[in-house]
Image 1 (cartoon, helix red, strand yellow):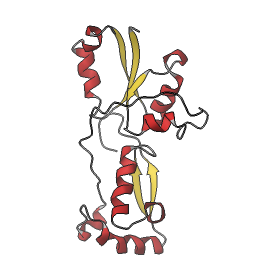
Image 2 (tube, one colour; image 1 turned 135 degrees about the horizontal axis):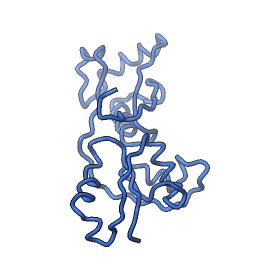
Image 3 (tube, rainbow, N blue to C red; image 1 turned 120 degrees about the vertical axis):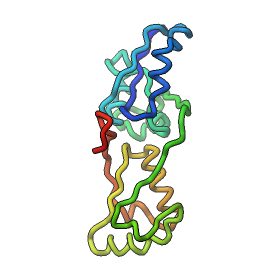
Length: 174
């Protein structure tokens, strides 16, 4: 194989793909015709991976860590049976963070979320659940926020409402 279509989401993480393309690394190892293609959303990237380049999709991608496993297990591709081989290579794991809303700053939330449990429970009881924003269900952002809350005794499925917000398409925060 001398060609491949590799997808990425417009975040800082896929820089390795750009450097490899610009420095001729793909060509050096026998793949001179690699294309690096911007993908609109995590879901689009997933769908294009399932299609493959033969189906007008992509052959590989720089994506959130659990997505290859979720695709292989058929968990995020209900129309695609489990078993499509998708391999993950961990190229980067740094630069993860969780941001909290200004109205919770007086709680001085840190690694230990136990002190925010009462406040979150009160908010939920009043009918206004906190909102959790993630880039893809089951993605690293989703897993980290769930782990962080659960470590403090907070059930993320009961106390917050999670919704998907795609990364910025032009580099600006939305």
